[in-house]
Length: 212
Image (cartoon, rainbow, N blue to C red; front, side, top):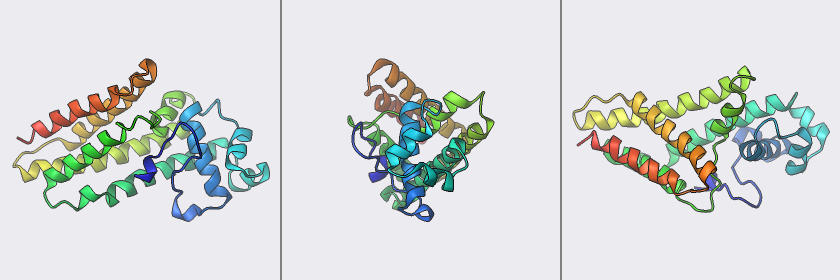
């Protein structure tokens, strides 16, 4: 789960989209993603991004017209990374759709049970800040949510059909996503990181209970 390595200290370790390579563009996306996720969009300057990336300011403007364009690339990279990781995860190889769904939910619960993980999502953090002020970033964030709900919703619906039940996978996946994003906010406010996996476990039991 190297894509989940969100440490409070040290170098940001998210793998870069293959088409971006390990050059300056990839470094800028990694640095921008980490800073936006931790500090927010407005509080992150181009100067801080190039410093964190270890590249020149000229290199930044060679690859991106402005900070907004970089943020869109960061969100697109985050979206692709999450989807690719989901598709390549071991639980996706399970033949039983119910076990596949359970493996997916357990995967995310385990991710947010890591006490060293920073409790933040680039998509949620960005849209909370810019929903009213930046339609471009709002739409880019919404696209990430749409894909996440579609992917999980598909697993839920297949699991339901395997047990002879017609479940509204999109609605249940939306509920899971809302629980996750709300739990991240509550954890930040309270400092209680255990709140995140606890809330997700409750939703897991609810969703899987519909299959019984």
